Image 1 (tube, rainbow, N blue to C red):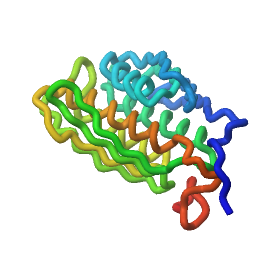
Image 2 (image 1 turned 45 degrees about the vertical axis):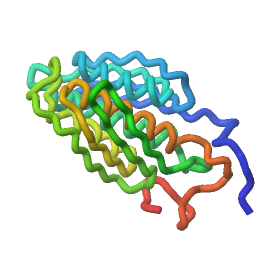
Image 3 (image 1 turned 30 degrees about the vertical axis):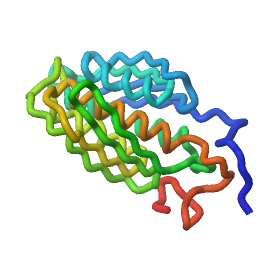
Amino acid sequence: MTTASPVKADLPRNATIDRKTNETEIHLVLELDGTGASDVQTGIGFLDHLLDALARHGRFDLELSCQGDRQVDDHHTVEDCGIALGRALQEALGDRLGIARFGYAYAPLDEALARAVVDVSGRPFARIDLGLRRERLGELSCENIPHLLSSLAAAAGITLHVDVLAADNDHHRAEAAFKAVALALKSAVAASGFNDIPSTKGTIGGVSP
């Protein structure tokens, strides 16, 4: 019999990731049960903006600094930030005991409307369709925005579907998408009210449930 219980009420759900390669050096601290406070410094303004939106609307506390080879381009910085954040999410969730597992959300931003659906499944998969038309937003290449989300999903071991249902402005498309992801993740990692692992196989993590 399962019993009602908050998610690991006596254990903090957080992670610290230090990741250094020849391309980037990243320090990241994630607290899932936070207030939405963030301090993100990647050297790419619009990337900071999107990650700040993810933390703020997911109510995650996020500290992230990245020194990347931006003299090459922005790809390595974006990809490695996604990997580091995904690994932090996976570590902070642990064995997924007592989480809701599934989450979905719609987020509007003026004329834009985005949808995100999450399964904290242990199975990494991402389908991202933002419909971006510009080459860049600030110093961030638009092709790297969906790549950030897919890198996060792969490293976190989650299934993530994101699409923009309506929009005229690419800034609004990208920001609405990240707000929707934040809200969906917030729901997926929240307490289910049951002290069990939400899987018919009884396990969720690095191994498929």
